[in-house]
Length: 359
Image (cartoon, rainbow, N blue to C red; front, side, top):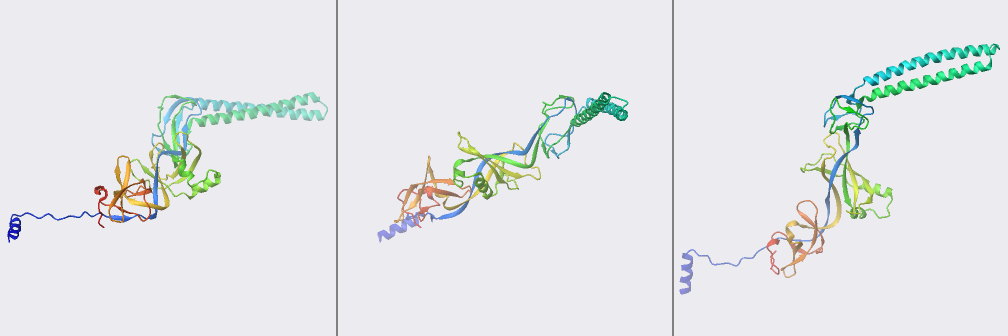
């Protein structure tokens, strides 16, 4: 009766009797599966046909016909250099050609006349030979004068500087009125129809698929079988056109142990520019990879561990090595676990060594 009154009194005072609470955790069984791992490499873009524009003649820069960053087509006029001297040289060369042609006609008439007279034994063979040589010399002078005219026309054409490729105009360090010469850099045209993303890959990555004794044809086949790659801008935006790996250098950098590589991306809209930095993403398909949720991995200083559930339902810490597969959810396990092991996932941060795990 007293015990009953005590319990009634406690209840009346609003106090709860403590109850035993069992913590429960989510677990999974480790298994292997096929997965696509996005390998990421820092890259820098470069036009496949970046061309430095310099004049072929000296003179005063009269006109700049483009602006920095402008998209231009092959053959489009970029700069105009003072052509007055070149025009005068052309006119002089043409006048010399007319004079040489007149001299050739005179020499031809004299040679033909002497030839007729020689056949009638009126002039000597010496006079015939002299007139023939004069005619040949006159013809050579005409050919030389024609070459001078052609050269003058070329120099006149050089006064108009055109785009050698389709692309984008880079920095223009000159201004109208500047004196320019063949050593002056006017600008650079980045041929951006196709863009190369230059990056480095580890030697181990290549050796995993290509043996050390592989021929160039074997490497070309390996590159052809690689999946298409993605280019990510610095702000995380994905470029809409995919590219292909088109080059792997055959020399390993002794300092970094890496190989130079290039991935080529089409650039039909001109949205990519030389010098832009970003990330090349190569999606590699891997078979039989052990994956665990990232929440299952507990980081302690420089170690990683998961809690493995033993046969008696208690948890024990197991050190593992992992690598991030890039999906934001899972880690791939490279050591520390076996297929069929059961591990704690949700709640792993709260597990105590030897604690009973209910599942």
